[in-house]
Length: 168
Image (cartoon, rainbow, N blue to C red; front, side, top):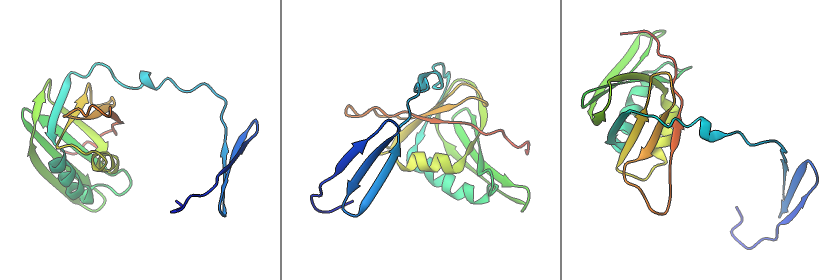
């Protein structure tokens, strides 16, 4: 990113857009397709809701993910009452870790798996004390939302579950 004012030359044709500034040349392929209906992917009915400290969950995920399988990065979230159990296991190296956190929870108890790297990335990019994780089932996408709404922005993060390994 230039630190001074730089002229940008923009050109395009039917298939590409061209940007030129300084000694940088960038080509972007233009796609003339119908944009996917992303709103159909976002679950609208989420009767299972958990509210938890973003920093507590983020810290736990960072610690627990060290013990997760290096290919899947799978962590297991088990929500029972007002308790969240975060766990991971790597059967190849006989590693496992568990932590329990307090949370607010409404709806049925649930056990769901996620890729820890995705959760860590999402939680690291939120600027809120508390987050909400809204879910409907262990095989359906979850929604991460800031618990406190900022009038200037509307944030919704969709996280897809991973199939849980059947360890106990």
